Each structure stands twice: as C-alpha cells, then as structure tokens.
Image 1 (cartoon, helix red, strand yellow):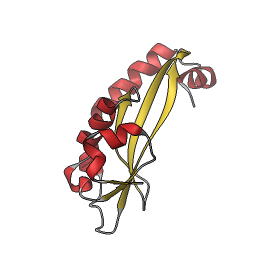
Image 2: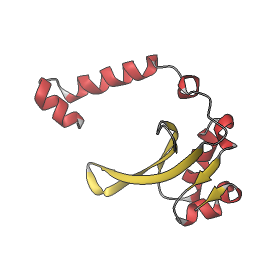
Image 3: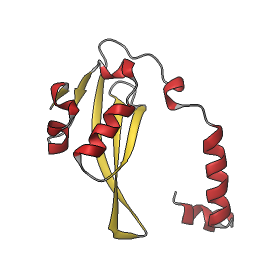
Image 4: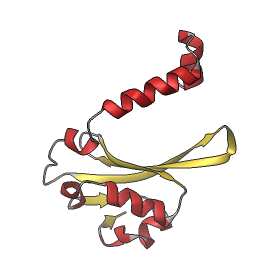
Length: 121
C-alpha cells in the first residue's frame, strides 16, 4: 500500500508516517547480518524495475539481486538504468553471495559492468 493509502486508511498524516518509517528503519539490523548462508547449488537473479516519484517523468529504477531458491532480496540499488547503478548493486551484494552463479536479462548495463564475467543469461 502506498503512503497515501496508509494515510487515508489510518488517518495518519503522511509526514508523521514518513518520520515513523525512518525511525523504524534506523533500528533494523544490517541486511547482510539477517541473511542465511547460501547453498553451493544456489543462484542469484538480477533484475530491475521502475517506479516514479510524484510524476511519471521522474523515474527511479530499483535494481535487485535475489536468491533463486527462496527468493529473499540480498541487495538492492536505486538510481537510473545505467552501468553505474548496476555496479553499485554488485558492490552491495555480500561477498558470500557473489560467488554464486548469476542470471540476468539482456540489458546492456549488465554486459558492460563488472558483472560481465559472472552473468549467465
């Protein structure tokens, strides 16, 4: 549900909801400490999707790396659809997951970035 939807349903001002979400996020442990050890036969899937902020001209791309078997997101990056954002995603993947076989679509950023030697399509 969007923040606007939560605002309407629970009659909480969006600004207060944003403050509460930020406070809660600061108390969460690092993502890497909550992830289980990957199995040797496991694989990573890399993908990207877009959303927008306030208007459709203001696109933001969300890049994710998820474990194929159990589907937890192991890393993410938000930015444009460039090689730099792809590289930022790769750098955020915990080292113990980088050794896994990796799959992605044919988007050129994957092929140009530091991922090119580890990705299968």
